[in-house]
Length: 191
Image (cartoon, rainbow, N blue to C red; front, side, top):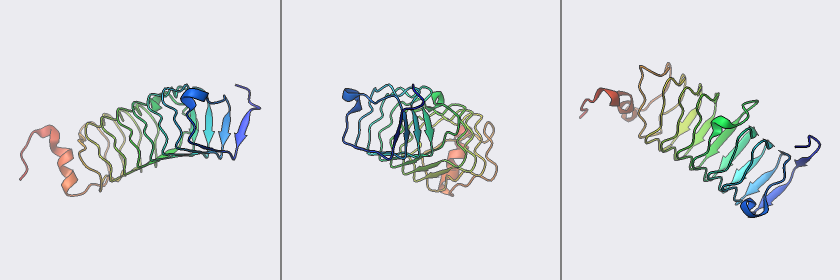
């Protein structure tokens, strides 16, 4: 990719990049609305201060893709391997997104916001989620194993199962109803 090819302050709407392709470039301060990136090769592209709204990323290749201060809103992002992204300055937020079957293995996700997202069977193994917020998220089958969950807010999320013996959960916040998700491994009955 030519370091000279920078796309700035552009808006893309209702574009199917699985047909037209996306130019290899650095995208800065761009907005992508109702676009399809499904099965698109986004490897090694750079997105800085970009917003993606109501877009489909399912099964896109994001190997070495840089997401820096990027917001995803209402996006379908099934089966994405965020753990293969460029980790340098990686910073994202998710609102109303479907992230089912995605992986954040060993990622540094401090202060990341997940708001009203479906996170079915998402892998956060060995991820550092310190001070992140999971607000109103469906978390069935989410994998937390040797994860850093210190000061994470789970108070409004549901259907998670977290083993306090294999994860760091100091000062994490849970609702009274959500505490059941910390006791699943003990196979006890709570009435």
